[in-house]
Image 1: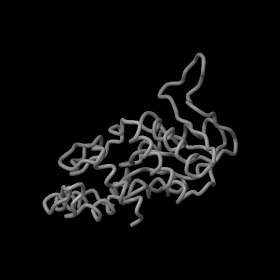
Image 2: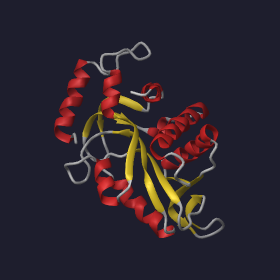
Image 3: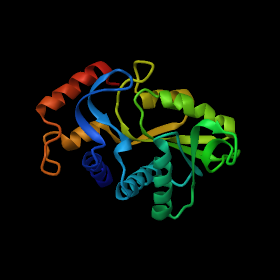
Image 4: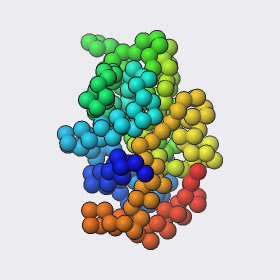
Length: 224
């Protein structure tokens, strides 16, 4: 596993973005782990987060894109942080773009924040986590309604590796097949388990035998 992935796993734990226990997800599933990108709140955290995203985006998409699109609401700071980091790390100026939940009819009118979109723009969508793929169902038509853009791919921070809306394949696989663009994550849940299972992180064991058993049971039902 690449060094930056190991660092990112520990970074999520340090920031209390990735937690372990018992959680009820938006989908109604009872999960032994939970990720909340809203817990990145300080300048230092957002700077580092942007760097991790930029590295992963560069690894998978190179410089072959023009715009980072972050769906409202959590995608807005993600797209801003990653755009800044991409400029600093790789010397390329890309644009950030996000959507409003409701179109604005005065001043800066329309449904978009940040950069506008024009025909031929190559777009990478950036999100925190995709559990079911429902958010892309909302995002895809928004992008296509603005201009004839090419969606190069989707980058999330954590691939939960569980069934999407179809109930068989993972959400990221379903998105890839339905929309025809690449889907990637900075880390997968398998990599998180590999790095943390019975291994001390900052002097603490986060995934012990009991939690590993709970995760295994969860994946027997929801794993893809």
